[in-house]
Image 1 (cartoon, rainbow, N blue to C red):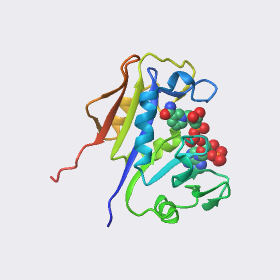
Image 2 (image 1 turned 180 degrees about the vertical axis):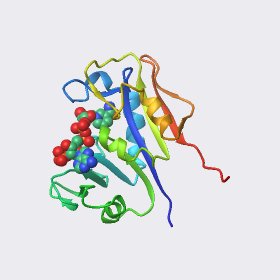
Image 3 (image 1 turned 30 degrees about the vertical axis):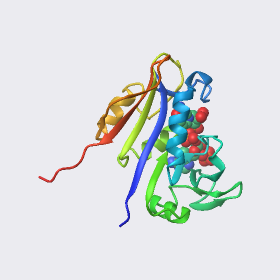
Length: 189
Ligand SMILES: NC(=O)c1ccc[n+]([C@@H]2O[C@H](COP(=O)([O-])OP(=O)(O)OC[C@H]3O[C@@H](n4cnc5c(N)ncnc54)[C@H](OP(=O)(O)O)[C@@H]3O)[C@@H](O)[C@H]2O)c1
């Protein structure tokens, strides 16, 4: 069977939020270094998966194949607004059926949010790329994963079998970094 990998991407505030109290991603969470990292990652992905409100809005976005989660369809449907997008309701169709419809059988799938969509793939990520803006706090904001802030985003990833690799600095002035959280290889007993 051809190899398929699933990677996740998010940038969070020090208190684990991906959006502000109004449910929007604020300018405080936008950094050029992270934008470059995220753009390059999506340029090399074969398929983007996200909820209806998490479109990445980059210059190359129109050319990317994507699956958009929505309950406005029963199962799978073409997106009338985007010929490269497939609308998917997981209540009516499996993920395998969705990627089949999108025409992707191998390569890299990038999952880019929001929180419920991240959660759906928590046990399937090969690597989750967690960007952190340690100087930003978003009180009352939208937690990046269900279970945050009772647990930190890092604790949630670790609880799903992911291990932190070496962090890479994306913006030295603001201490913004990205850490790859990789699935621990299963060894046979
Ligand atoms: N900081 C970051 O890196 C980052 C990353 C991602 C998102 N964000 C921000 O976070 C906010 C988005 O949050 P959001 O909670 O609105 O998330 P979202 O997942 O983008 O959008 C939610 C919508 O997606 C659909 N959906 C989600 N889960 C579904 C499921 N299991 N089955 C069917 N449909 C499903 C539903 O669409 P319908 O209403 O059409 O049914 C739902 O209303 C935005 O401001 C975005 O910019 C930030």
